[in-house]
Image 1 (cartoon, rainbow, N blue to C red):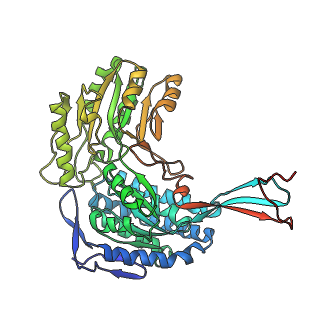
Image 2: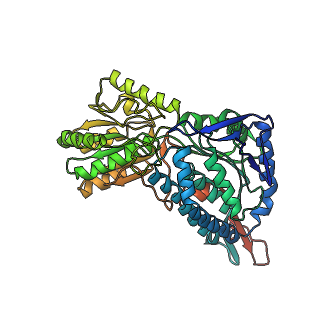
Image 3: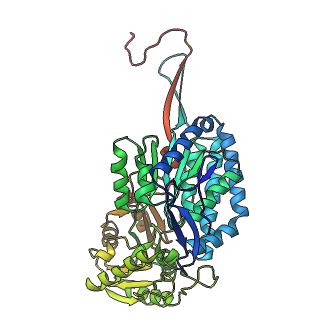
Length: 489
């Protein structure tokens, strides 16, 4: 099988070392493609390419940059079926969800393309006569984007679309589990008319290509999505050069079900949030905090629904849950089943691999879980959720807030007062009322608090702040020297 090359400037090249790695299908083990195992020398070339392209791209009018993103959205739409099928194969996401992943990239490209005619700054009145003041957004330079495998088309769009519309250039290091999807993403960007060198892709592993990108002195901005531990390492490695670092890290998200909730609706939300993408989402609901008055009934209805979920080939339209991404993920998820049993939680269903072929794990529900147990505090990143009984709204909020993460949260209730208190009191970047913990839209900020990140956001207007610097401009047309903040009386 031929090697899919790095894309650096106008060149397609292999790793300087000649080393390669293989991407495989998690459902079957079949090979998808072979890719360069890049290292520092390859990253250096990609950064040099992006740096050389920066001046030309930042001076390209923002509406023209937006026009390229509009064309890119059209091209993504035309290739949606191709990318959807490829995602079911390389990543293992079921077809309906894979199509949604591509659609999110289409939506993000359209949204950020529109910013080409806004990129709003501010104008304010001066305290002096005959003086004009404004602030504008300025591009920063080369952006290092390190993306995960679980949203292999959507998340690159979250990072690249705002970076590009703001006038930055990019070096993308995608996850080694889904390199072909990233490759197609960048190829289609170039098909939309993106100039050579504006986006470069370097394949490889985090400890080699990723680390070199993080430490490169000519990469002033880093956007990373991954684990909390790796995010901390990225921050430390970037500190000596005072890089701008945007982190989107883990989650341990909770759905609260109050005694007045619509139980069937809550079960719908739990099943979708806990087991969609086989639980491999940072927004997955791995905790369900349930009022004791409805605990037994919710438990019964949830287990009945979960046991009807069908594992299978992700490209089969009848499949509900596809495989986990790789053998390490399967081993990790099963280890948490053993941890939960050791902690005294009650296993209601699942708790075992689902097939001898592929990395499948049966959807798993634990009951009688205490908020302090490891399975209720640590990110599992698989199809496992835990039921935590509580006796009051206040106890539910306290349990939801008791973890180190703060990405997404949810409450099911018919009480408008409780809903608004939850919106105020839940320590999370996202709160849903009478919906699950997943389903963010591209025109609102996405991100979390506490251990979930470092205060930045993706999507919406907030994403522009990651990829721009503010410049304040003063225009004095008085014809004389005027001194602000000076007592001239």
